[in-house]
Length: 230
Ligand SMILES: Nc1ncnc2c1ncn2[C@@H]1O[C@H](COP(=O)(O)OP(=O)(O)OP(=O)(O)O)[C@@H](O)[C@H]1O
Ligand SMILES: [Mg+2]
Image 1 (cartoon, rainbow, N blue to C red):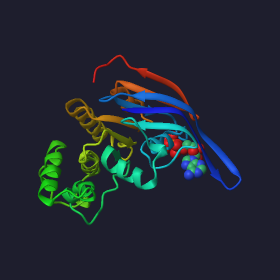
Image 2: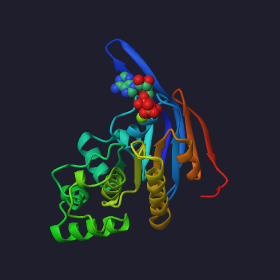
Image 3: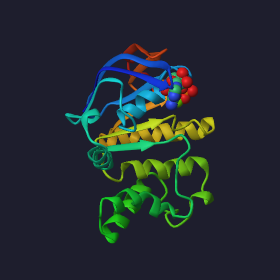
Image 4: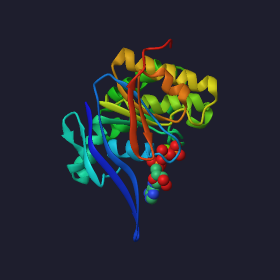
């Protein structure tokens, strides 16, 4: 599903180089749910952005469904991302002047799907994430947790091979955080969606079966927790 091979990354600002990731190696199988844990500045977002094809690594490769995404041209990558990769942002990134349903439909508009099929798909997913009654509202009329549910539905609407989330509960209170993690676990179990979730909350990581930990850009731990109570 996802293979990260000898991945290293340095940021260059003028003459100065900042090494951020060092020889990272791991594999994520289909249907896994992985927490990517590490303190602030350890390189979590950089790794996630590289895996999601939002930028190119200095060294190494990233395979998704057998394809090396770092070798793709900008156009190939844009198309691949549209069809294979979902992304959930900490700050939801919904479009304010579109309704909840239209926000979820948007990736399908880019795929050229017909209006009726788009609508049916968006409404079905919004119902699945508990927002069947809110489809015609605007994002500003929803709570933070509800907005994140919209963004989760949007990330799934193209049936991606893998979904990346960068601190999806970072803006939410503890109770809502738990509800969103419950939802992600439910989607992982019922639809076999593969998730990689960045967090620096140990509490979130405790809920996923597998945890990959970064420290100062090095992968220090990759472990399966013994399925503690959920
Ligand atoms: N565009 C950039 N140019 C230069 N350095 C960068 C750039 N983006 C990130 N960095 C540096 O890379 C390191 C890792 O940043 P990254 O955003 O991946 O950390 P993080 O683990 O996601 O942290 P946080 O938990 O605070 O979000 C930091 O030292 C940061 O300053
Ligand atoms: Mg980050």
